[in-house]
Image 1 (tube, rainbow, N blue to C red):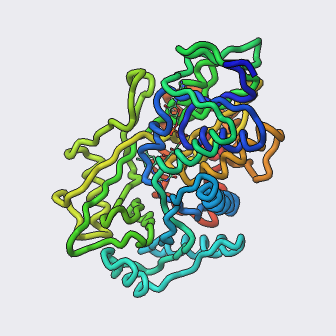
Image 2 (image 1 turned 45 degrees about the vertical axis):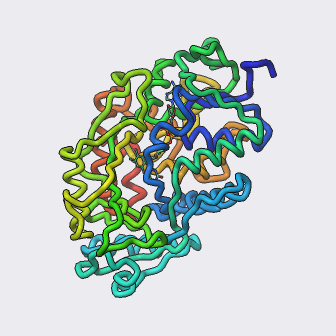
Length: 426
Ligand SMILES: Cc1cc2nc3c(=O)[nH]c(=O)nc-3n(C[C@H](O)[C@H](O)[C@H](O)COP(=O)(O)OP(=O)(O)OC[C@H]3O[C@@H](n4cnc5c(N)ncnc54)[C@H](O)[C@@H]3O)c2cc1C
């Protein structure tokens, strides 16, 4: 292959692009990853790194179960240990949340996911730093865990490089080269790169990259914040303490360096216009203000479950930008308007955990024309002809609404109908 020619160009060096590149290269494709800044410095570098496999539907849970196995294989191939298997709990304090857990346990067991109910007194022993007296039900997923997203990104990068992936950093794609309706390359400040297949894995920027071909992609860039406490002398958090999700209070978390990491999907979140951010915008340099309203809401919610935590608790605050879609599910595959252009984006706060299986799915779609997974709910074209999804303001509002209901809505037996695009347009 000549210098700037490959089989596939991936636009974006976050976990989605890196995992896809690695899987494609493993199958013998010549792949180039073009990254506007540094590898893993987008949403990936800001993530909390929770790997919870339980989702509202069997096909999504199965995908994430496979993902954990892929991470374990990756550890062996990259010669690193990155996965911290702590197990995780979901807790319920209302009858509808208790029913949600019952439904999810039933669904999980039906696909051999390791999940069971855990008595509240046992939970209190495992997590003595957590308030449990108001809980009615909890479930335990022993194979869940977490990792440091930067370590996952560098493992994908290493194994990809071993299979011949070429990575170009500080290399923003500024134009897509089209021959009629067929993509054949991109323009960058480092010159043109050519390939018959391009993958838009540009995270929160992906709708801007789609805009280069006048394609409207229904994603929005929304802010997210989490806090990490320093070790508390009276409430130590063991490094192997379980991760947790408390959807009633909209919070999730895990242990981190003897302290507690807590994040929140609130009703409200900051909105970002990626178009107005400087070309050299570096997400890793984002800082949350200590008087920020969303941080105050997070601390208040965290306090409901961890009453010892307050504004004066020594903590580090992390903020970043996520890519949301109107139904909270990613876009994987092609759109009808151009040939050779694939999408791999919109991971709505769960791109780290989804990335291992998504790499497999994308490589299958690109190399085989179909996936061995049931991907109906994540196909890129599911909003293509649905009214209301061509206008940016409308898209922004629908994605924002989805973020607000992300933890607010009840999963379980009702989840499948809630993610139908036609429902969303109603
Ligand atoms: C605060 C926070 C906490 C999170 N916690 C979790 C968690 O616990 N678990 C979980 O699973 N997920 C979590 N997420 C979500 C997760 O980080 C994302 O879903 C995931 O990183 C998305 O990966 P990506 O590759 O799609 O996007 P990104 O990591 O953003 O990568 C996209 C890349 O594309 C590059 N790019 C953009 N435009 C161009 C261009 N024109 N040319 C070339 N390159 C370009 C960007 O520079 C960027 O590096 C969290 C996110 C945030 C912000």
